[in-house]
Length: 65
Image (cartoon, rainbow, N blue to C red):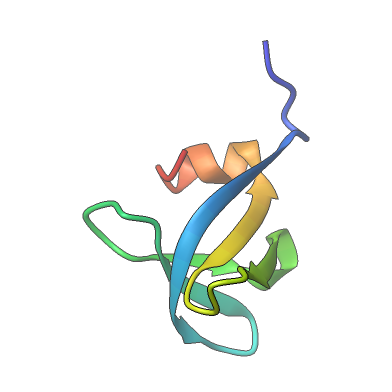
């Protein structure tokens, strides 16, 4: 059983960014907006992709887990 506060790391591509959110492509059918207040985004060593760390509940809610 998982806890609501557990974090997940997801490999993503960043498509757009506003002051409050990132538009990411996680390899699914649609791009998804993620609130910056709910996660961290760190550029991978390849310089093209990112590691998005968000709560597991948000990943499930956005259907990206």
